[in-house]
Length: 534
Ligand code: AMP
Image 1 (cartoon, rainbow, N blue to C red):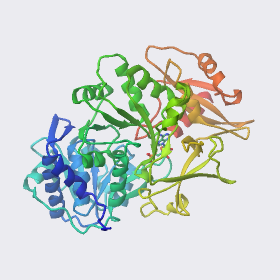
Image 2: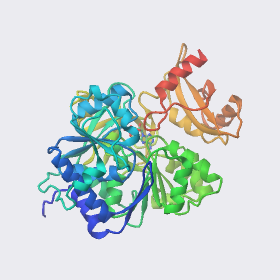
Image 3: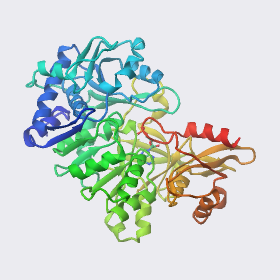
Image 4: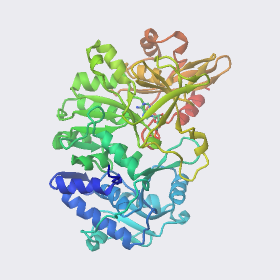
């Protein structure tokens, strides 16, 4: 067979050649843009030529500080297309961590959204490697800024070469992109994605037994483009020639509902909190969401109740997927096998609420102190993963030794695996609650509490306990128009769990603290709870 390298440029070239008239709809601060793949292709080539002119070398990093829009998409292809590496920066990191990731990645050029300029201005003195700043804006002029030199993206593109040829001779194992994990403790850890990893990941996202992204889709990544390459969706959507809707900055659940209705979005992906918000809006019945064929939920566990709410009330198919920054991210996808489709409704939803089977080419196992766990849905162990789009180290980081061992990625996620091979994430190792020598899953409790009709969100954390070592406390946000007491919630949980699993306390809150990628921030919550209940 021919040894054709699996690289990123042919993925865009395919969209240019076969789907030149398909659209990328992109919302920026000023307006909604509509570009065809033919135009996106030319603009991407112009950007690649500009980056070359600015002196960016093969393997060097160019950072983006940007929301989901067409310019960010162009950077996704332009940087790897001219041999460099796109570093998607999480602009919500603390200033310390922001400085750390930019310096650690040795970013040479930063592409920055106009509303995010202040984020970089505030730390610029500490940046040691950046030589050029580019502002991504619809405005004609470059604003006053302390960043220098600061160029306008559009003015640079006007001078760029729209017929630029992407680099030939790229090795498929060269790095193409990079993200840092938003670690809850310690400095963020960098993960480099290879051309090959991204190409194979995109191929698998097109398989019918996984996300099945195709030319028929109108794909709206709500997950930020700095969170594991927006789960690879911009790459695979472009590769397959799907229409893309990029929702831009400051979107609300209403705006997402409007986009779904007006652009007839068929496929979208995001974390559970996004879907809880959208659900509230769609439940009022003012928007038509019938175009959706798949809402993909990952990043944290999707409670069974949210899957049922989307499917039974709204008729919108809802799928649970699992992955990490270290895994590009798709590892497993929850869909029923043909024989499971015959099962009772309750059992079907129980399976669907698990994180699902590993997708093709990904290998998994669970291990604990006794060795490999049985696939019986009961025994718990840490999930280990390997495969062609799983990182084998962190970028220049000695913490690699702990996580990447014996040819496997050690995830830190505690799982059971059932007879059908479906993974269930029981907890993060550090979030499991150890009570009287037994383990309590905070995830199981949260998911059950979120099934209560008055509850909008819930997170369960461990607090220290003299006798039992640790006990669970539930933090609950009620829906706007609903009431419930501690007793109501405990009564609701009682039939579902052993008595010693039930939270000692229910703390009602206005909102739950979140991480920069929208997950519940358990560490902050734990501190808050310990203070509140003494
Ligand atoms: P990140 O690298 O920020 O994407 O975080 C990865 C971590 O998020 C995983 O190690 C899991 O702990 C968690 N996670 C991701 N997807 C899911 C899911 N579907 N269910 C439960 N936890 C998840």
